[in-house]
Image (cartoon, rainbow, N blue to C red):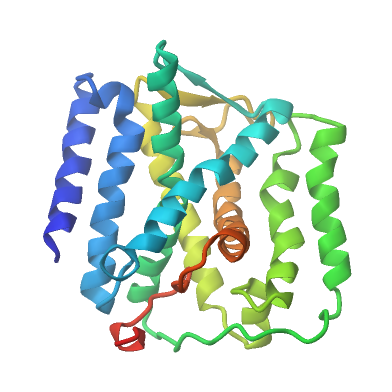
Length: 286
């Protein structure tokens, strides 16, 4: 395994020990520190298992992905101002440090989801070859309904905010953006479905569950953390998360795909690495 993988493992372990011992900066900064170590470690595992990884072969796009992860997550923070499903405690009083903490933590979200999905893909017994998305010449049947449903889901919490509306927020971008991505010839769940490919969706769903469990586990004992106010079965919890809330993490991973590939199309000018599926070293350009 590359040396940075061992470094990532040491960072994760050291931050966990420091956090549980209530030692600073780990007690208050465990989330960004541990997830940074996790990203290094998982990327190294992917490199070892497939011969290719984001940090070894697509560093420029990885930096872009981490940078765009921050504003993409702010979309959900904006919705939370309306539905009020979580809040943060023990944040740094210094506004500069507080904003650094926000930016650092949020920048790890999309990389963690995508790298975990690739790792899951390397563990699967059958590894189908990556298929080119291909431009769709016409809107597939049902596309208009999907886009309309997604738009309705995302407008609903804005017009009539309520704490029960987390599901529309964490599903709406899938219905809204995935058909658009397919029509533009980008990586999409709809495009995979037409090719009878389910590996990307399966990898992402598993990644969402794994990352969700780790987010909640690492958050539970930290000093600086988030607290949920979800009104559905609020007392039945795993860590801080009401148990039904864990259903949102796999869906969120699919949303990460739909949001990122469109953002990459609009903002990124380099070549794009496949998202949610391992990229074998043999597929890289010489």
